[in-house]
Length: 196
Image (cartoon, rainbow, N blue to C red; front, side, top):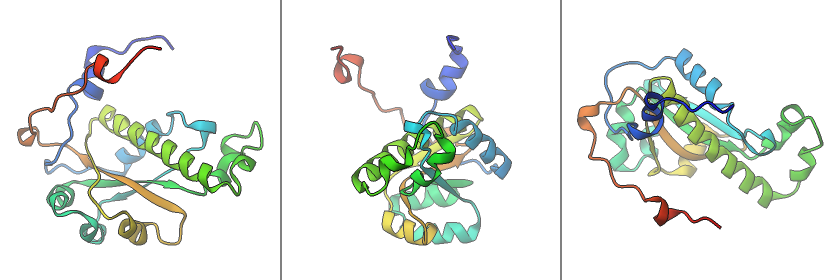
């Protein structure tokens, strides 16, 4: 694959994309979220381990369950979002490796190695969360990723009885561009990168 995507696509994914905090009253359907996942799942993870697990908080009851977990500054924007993705990672991801990476016994790399399990799940689940945001933007949605919540409470309320741990939240919908803050600066190449 050597095709460079056009400027419109680059704007949608990066240059004009913004973190939204206010939302238009337009629904997000489960079918659209499924389409977003079907794009996001194609991004690479080490040994195709695919540890991301996402709960889409959409119903009024689920929103009320999430609300006490949020820092005060994040309540209004989250409660008004059509959907909030709880991006988590499964610490038992390696049990699916015989299916996802059948070329070798990759499961044995992880069994009993809690440090490797934790770092692999977190790193690759975070990557998948980023893929999710790019896929959502590509599908015409806006995103509002954030920290600022009680991870332990979210895990208790949404991942109880599982080995999934929350990482970050991402509000999803059609953002209200009129409510955007001015774009903050980004680091230039020479401030953030070097060539060895």
